[in-house]
Image 1 (cartoon, one colour):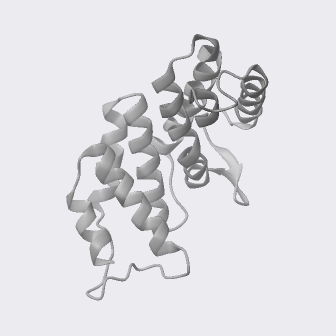
Image 2 (tube, one colour):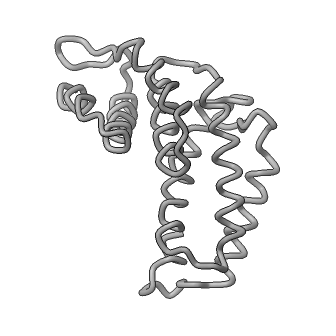
Image 3 (cartoon, one colour):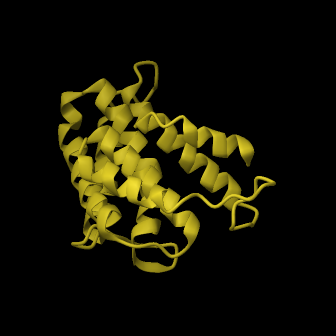
Length: 174
């Protein structure tokens, strides 16, 4: 979406690229369950794994929305349908591990930034009310090679999109 939207790109307003993006969204919509989830990451109908997919799709829509090419209106509509449907799964669905709460919250913050709805923020607040588990040394309860980076990225996203700078204190502590 960045290359089709940027006037200095060789793909700016590319019909071929627009067709490929539309095909991709047709596949995504076909694979999306009625509850808004996807089968991803080895998990069936998984809200957190769907949230990981939104990590890329929501910023792509933000880029498309900046350019507002009329030829891409159908693509933007498909992406909105996918995202709003996924938002329902994020609002009502559960998680597999503690860090998935923050992945879902970041997805909800992204969705809310594109298509504002108080229900997204309410769900984020419910998850945040459970507390973010970090010890005195700055380690999250889940430790592996990637969890700290994943949690930090999600907290930065939530802080930035919902103006919650206090979440950055946790990231700094980690």
